[in-house]
Length: 187
Image (cartoon, rainbow, N blue to C red; front, top):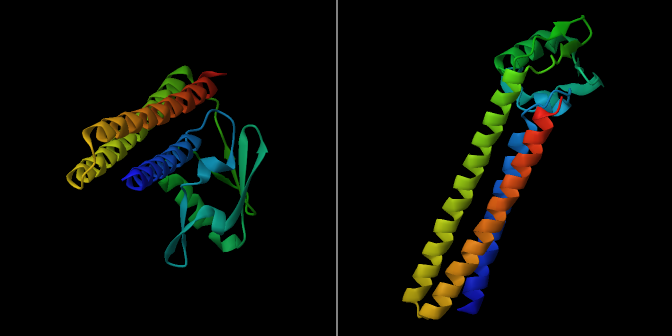
């Protein structure tokens, strides 16, 4: 029984770690005013008929704090890359200079900063919902062990441990959100 509980805890922690990693990736997509190649991470380009991530068909880098450059490996892809960036709905207007694309990252307005904080908060809530779903699955596994002979005391202890793990992951999500909010609101 103890090994079964340990396995449930390990699976629960592992699933929640993956949720935290996903949350961090989603937060990295929310720009905080400084140009970053990660801003174009979600851009897909039509590369000879198949959707391909931008990073696989071009070099993406920052020229300065306000400018992203996209240097395609094949010049014929400039228009497709430009279309991919516009279709990604990131609010960027790439400039084509014949060799590469220059993307000027406009400074954020106060209203836009608040919108980004709301988006980050929504991602935070989504991550917490995922953690709570994992908690429900873990609690269901513990209940199924009760049918296999797990004592009530051990069940209560296991439920308490699962709740403690849930709280720690929830706190981690709150910390990440606070850091991102501070990053967004800092001018």
